[in-house]
Image (tube, rainbow, N blue to C red; front, side, top):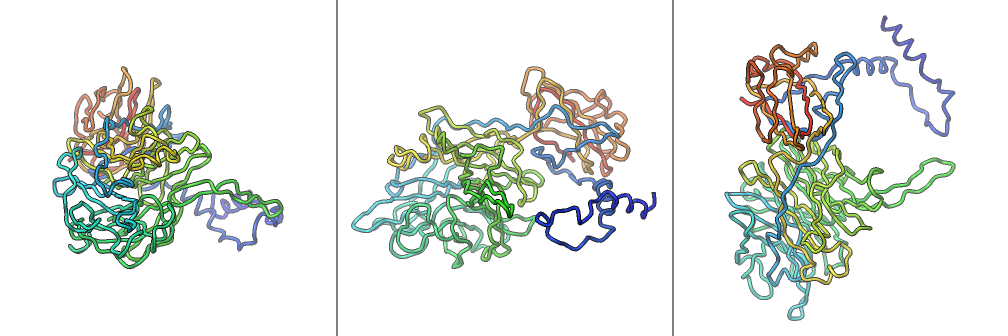
Length: 532
């Protein structure tokens, strides 16, 4: 068909402007005639192969999954997203014990830095000593050699109750009492000069101590060592709350932060009979900066939707970059259900640190049984920590009782302690097949290297996985790399080599567009990687 013939056919199927209600559609200039054709041709044109090189690829969303076509009949089938398993610490790894933590201990941030684990957290005296109201939120510091047993050194930096013999490292640098350094998030800036290598964002309330949850501004501070801090004068945004997640993204070349926001529901925007929106609850918003001094306005990025209970809020975001794999960012959302008075952890994922999805709604970290230290509330502090030996961890702020519990509010330290959840590398969300055989194919890939490794976990007694290498040019299996050639994988491993009857090498296909096909049952696949 000629181009003009195609255009005639395409435009003939469009409704006339007169058939549309003026109340529904505002007048707008007609698009160029060729735009419809260009869009149709673009949809028919296959996207360029994804260059994965030798970088690890996590399978936590549909980005790498081929949708399938009628020509090759490789539609995904009998698969679902599911979360991996975590091992929670049976008891808190740190319980507050210091006088300046008497009011509250919360909002932890752990970094593995210089061969040791370093913890920054909020410590709150929340009381009057000698007629002076103590600062409500201070930033305190602890460190550990194993990430479990913590020491609180006497640093001699900040005076509290007439003495500098404490582990306090920051109190907003303001005279008098009542100000806050709430929800601190410390990160290492790889682009900064030595004096500003460590950065922190926190919520501040100028003036005397305000009511809870009326923080005025998001602020920033910098340090050469993570201990001696100076604050930046600028206010980044207004009305933050809880703990902000922040870091520097080398791909974007920007600082990115995730802050508390709000969401709504129930709006019907018709002129004749509108329904106004109602507040739904807490959600996550995003800001970014090229300088760390001036930030964009907060934009919504993650909020509860119609698949969630109406009483669900995302109280915290637990933002965590994931530098151990290609194009990976996580949020460990504090999913608070007001009716049950429980907060567990759900997961959101992103490839670009801008757009976020929630592939699965089941909790990644669940509450413990009644009476346990995390039965009522779990929040994940920003950042995933590499424990070594293919083990990762997140650190949690936990309480035995629910957020709005009067008993918790009256308990020492508001009932908060520090927990830890450990999991194997990459195993946060994966693609799972159950007893019925599952199948999916990747999109077209270009790789380097000579071997293929997978991170897989059996979920039943009949676990089995086979992999096929397919030419992306014609969708035909590559000779000697078919399912029937593949030596099945039936065991657990984070780096299991895939092999076929005649070879374990894939180097002859390096640099050529291919797709991987997976056929499996009672197995969860988390990642794959081409190895040099």
